[in-house]
Structures are given as structure tokens and as C-alpha cells.
Image (cartoon, rainbow, N blue to C red):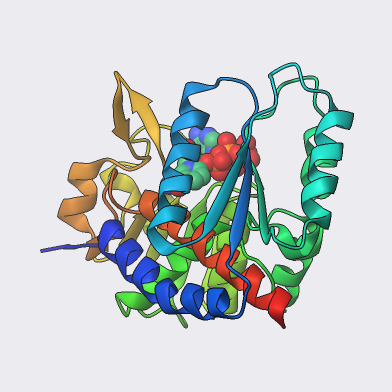
Length: 281
Ligand code: NDP
């Protein structure tokens, strides 16, 4: 019988553990604060931002929401971020994606100072991740690592296969698993014999964005399966792995919803607290 890796349980643990750290910072006059920039009226982005602000309130992190219009220019956004970079009371800055087409996304994201880059996307933080130096890590893959750690799933010496090589999920996931001494394979849309590669995995991470693409042929019996995918099919949230095959074949798996999703916001809170602690030295 496969263990269901419960993202909500781990999220609640992480948020509860942040409480005393937030209280200690607040007592020293440094209450953590997250600034969220939400551009335009994308309904999905509005929901994500609402959830992030609700999580802030739960752990005692201050938040501010800036809502420039969809017509905002790159220069206007850079000016907003410059103000937040210089504000000593703001510890984390999050630019909610996607950005409108007229905005130079990489220029804008890279303008957030690395110390406040709570999404962990800045090239300085990517470099620190690669080098194994302390820094702010991307939230989704670091949430997966927390999940594996707290469920005491061994990583060292095991074969990890990641399907997906995006900068925000697949690549950092691979680096984190490598740092934990897994033997790592990264697969993508040009991988030959994808099923064969996946069947080698003791730990299989799906970060593709294609509903239930990985079926029973892709899962080694007894593997741990982490399904990062969040796909809307007929209004229903589905992962990248066939849930029936995953439950039947794996030794442990993350359900969708309720698996990896809740951890992303928990790690954003954790990064904001880490950034505030870093500021205090
Ligand atoms: P991207 O679209 O940036 O990357 C998808 C990756 O999947 C690419 O590397 C792509 O390969 C690969 N891929 C696409 N099709 C195939 C295929 N047929 N066979 C093998 N590989 C394929 O997506 P993200 O990394 O941003 O997100 C992945 C999924 O995770 C999405 O469902 C997203 O919604 C979800 N997500 C969930 C989060 C959470 O909190 N749970 C947070 C972030 C994302 P190539 O590089 O060759 O194009």
C-alpha cells in the first residue's frame, strides 16, 4: 500500500515552525515583510497572490500588494522594484508571473536584489544553488526536498529521474537532488525512450505540464513518485502522472491536489523569514 505524501500536513508543520522565528524577528524590530507585485487582472494570478497573502497573515509576516495595470512598462516596473529594493522594511519581493508581453521579464526579475529574491530565480541565487552555497532556493523544488526529508525518504545513492528542465522546477530540482547525493537524470521533450528512463527511477519527479502523461509504463514498482504537475482539465486540477497507476505501483506518492502545491507557498514564507534573518545578520 503506497504512502500518500501529504503536502498540507508538511505545509502546516513548516508554517508552525516559522512562527517562533517570526516572533523573534518581530521582537527585534524586524517583522518580516513580503511585497507582491500583481500586474493586470489575470484571475489565476489573483488567486495565487491571495493565497500567498493569506499564508503571510497566518505566520505573522507583513505583506503589501502592488497592482500596476496590465499596460505597465518595463521602466515603470523597474522603478517600483527599485523602491522596494531600497526599502529596509521589505525583506522579500515577489513579481507574480506571467508578465504582460510588452515587459522585459528577465530584466525585471533580475532587478530584484538577490537578498530579497524570495522566488530564488535571480542568477546570483541560481549560481549559489549550483555551487552549494547558502542562498534563497526556488520554492517548489525546495518544498519537494522538505517533503522527502520529513517523510524520511532516503535519497543518497538512489536513482532520481526528473522529467522537465525548466529554470523554476526541473533544473533546480535536479541540482538539489544531486546535492543530496542522488544519481540524477534529467529528461525533457527530446529524450529518447522516456518510459525506459523513468522506469529506472527510485525517485521519479514529473514537472512537465501535461495531464496524466506518465502512466504505468513509466513507473518502477516501489518507486517514490513526486507529481509537480498542475493541469486544469475540464476545470479539475490534475497532475502529470496517472493517479491510478501511481497509487498502485509506487511505494509513496504526492497526490494532486494536496501534494507539492501547498509546499510552494510554505517555502515562500520560509524564504521570506530567511531573508529577514539575513538582513538582521
Ligand atoms: P515548463 O513548461 O517551463 O517546462 C516543462 C518541461 O517539460 C520542459 O522542460 C519540457 O521539455 C518538458 N516536456 C514537455 N513535454 C514533454 C514531453 N512530451 N516529454 C518529455 N518532457 C516534456 O513548465 P514548469 O516547469 O514551469 O512546470 C511544470 C509543471 O509543474 C506544470 O504543470 C506547472 O503548472 C507545474 N508547477 C507546479 C507548481 C506547484 O506549486 N505545484 C509550481 C510550478 C509549476 P523541453 O525543455 O524540451 O521543452
